[in-house]
Length: 135
Image 1 (tube, helix red, strand yellow):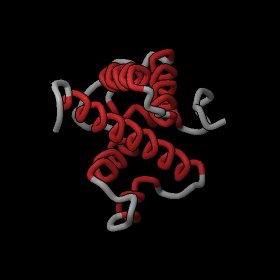
Image 2 (cartoon, helix red, strand yellow):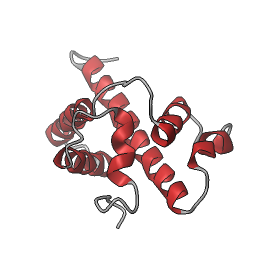
Image 3 (tube, helix red, strand yellow):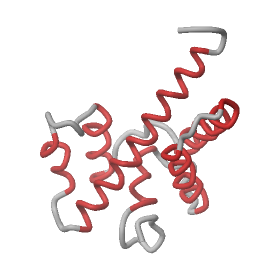
């Protein structure tokens, strides 16, 4: 892909996409729940459309029903977005979405969710929980 460190940069690019997408999925699930629609059916409703993805099909069920085997901790995502922020600062790349995800993860950590599963993004942004970001 390029000079030394290119693989690490590619991994950071992957994680920028993954963390932003999982955050957007959590917001969409929260909006669906706040609107009174069956958020558990959201993945099926969006299947085949532009928003459909492995992440959508994986995380909507995890965020709406729980009880799944943990995939990893939010603290891992925090480590990744901190590394993304460092790389952006070092290179002059402008990454406002990743910066927002970083703030959402910091909010989750302040709420005691750093050790929670990736699906706990929904607990950070869920409307009406008194601590979400969509207020």
